[in-house]
Image (tube, rainbow, N blue to C red):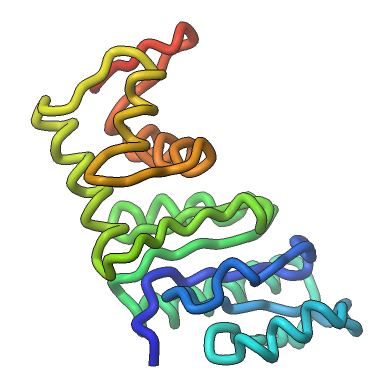
Length: 197
C-alpha cells in the first residue's frame, strides 16, 4: 500500500470536471463522492477510476437534501484524518460551508485546504518522499528566523522557485505563495511589497 501524503475529497455533485491523470503513481488518494443525481459517468473518467483503483475510492452519498453532501464529505474527511493523520488534505468543492471546519482543523495543526475546481489543485510531490512538508516547513522556518526575507514579490517568487534545489513552475510558486499568505507567514501589499508580521 502506498503511504499517502495527500488525501483529496471531491464533491463530484458540484465539481464534476475532474481529471485524475496527474495523480498516477504519486502518493495521492482521492475520495470521489457521488450523489443520487449522477446516474451516468463519462467513459474516460470510468477508465481512469478503473486504472487507478488503488488510489481512487468511490463513495455513493445515497441521500439528498440540504447539506447532506457536505456532511457526508465532512464524515469522509474525519475517516481520512484518522487513517492518515500526517497527510495533507484537500477538499474540492464549491460549497463555502467548509471554511469554519477548515479553520477548526488548522487550529489543531491539520493541513487542510479547499479548492473550488479540480484543475487548480496542485500537489507538490518532489522525488524525495519527505520533501513536500519538510521543504515548506524549512522555508517558513527560514523566513521566520530572518534568514530569507525578500522585500519585493518578484524576488520572493524567485526564492520560492529555487529554494532547497527546487525548480518550480510559476503556477507552483503561486500555490506556495498562497500557502505562505494563508498561514500568515508573510503579507504582500498592492504595490507588491512583502511584509512579515
